[in-house]
Length: 139
DNA sequence: GCCAACGTTGGC
DNA sequence: GCCAACGTTGGC
Image (cartoon, rainbow, N blue to C red; front, side, top):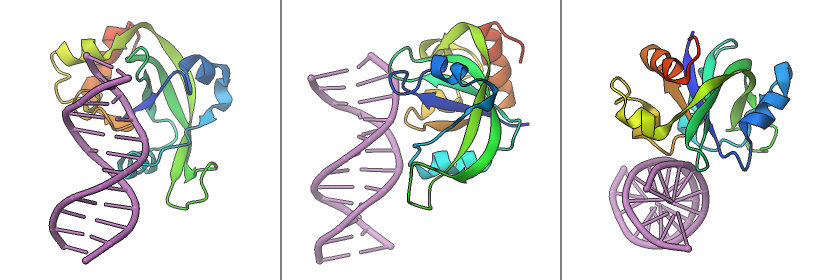
């Protein structure tokens, strides 16, 4: 199973809104970046991801699961843009801030730390375990 | 609100 | 195919 990280500005789409969608989940639409899209195309149903609040909070707040594989983005007429659906699994007991990640040994290579502008990114197995630990949840 | 980093666009 | 101009993201 692969791990990912999804960024959203809480003013646009927050963790609370994602949780409110329940098991049905929500289309992760609006991504217009090739790298982010390619990451979504690589996802499989059942893959897990972190839900990160950018700008406001700047912290990982929850865990999501991919519930539909990549398909054309319903909010775009451009066939280049695909996206997956994700559903909320659980909230972190303690949100893990960007600042925490920057100083945490073992997270030096994390994309969140090194490529601030990529909105859908891969997370390594080791990083997943570390961040779950920081957030007070089981991996 | 500013600005650095980065991606995309379009003229040549 | 290069590169300047421009737009967007996101941390500060």
